[in-house]
Length: 113
Image (cartoon, rainbow, N blue to C red; front, side):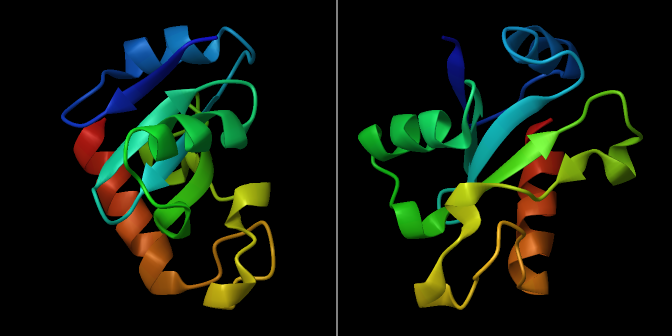
């Protein structure tokens, strides 16, 4: 299973290759909003989250997204993951409910890709 931590930059082509291991049109990603990094790849968001935690991230800062690389850049982030259910942060669904967190995720993803 390919999971890569992105700290600087990754190309759309690299994302496409990593995503093809499990999906045709997307790659799973987990964004650490504190460290401003993300892990891409794996079958489940929990795979990438576990990889980040083993590398020093805290689960409270991790948010799961799907990057649909065939969509326009403005629409390619899908906020849907079981790891996003964080009652302690009042996020009770798979979506990212806080608009500020959602915007931060978008900024980080757009900076890294």
